Length: 80
Image (cartoon, rainbow, N blue to C red; front, side, top):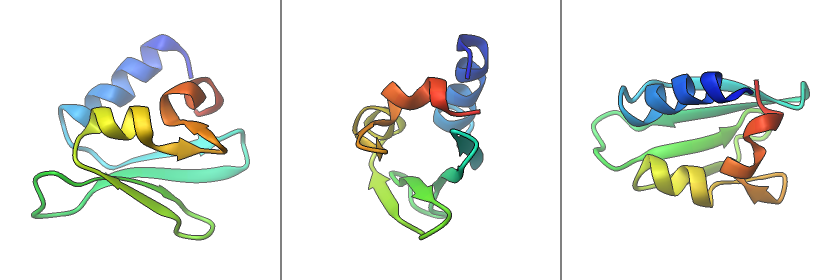
C-alpha cells in the first residue's frame, strides 16, 4: 500500500471508525473493525481462522497489532 492509500485507510479507521478489509500479500484477508456500542474497541482480525486482537485505540492497533510476527504498521507495504 502506498502512502496516499495508507493515509486514506488510516483516516477511515481512526477518524471515521469504518470497517476495512485488507489483503495481506495476496494471500490473507485481514479486517480492521470496531465493536458496535463499544467506544474503545479497535479489532484486527484474520479471516481464515478468526484470530482477533483487540485494542483501545487505533494507534495501539497500528503499533501493537501483530501480523506475520511484526507490528501492523511495519506491514503496511504488504497490504492492499
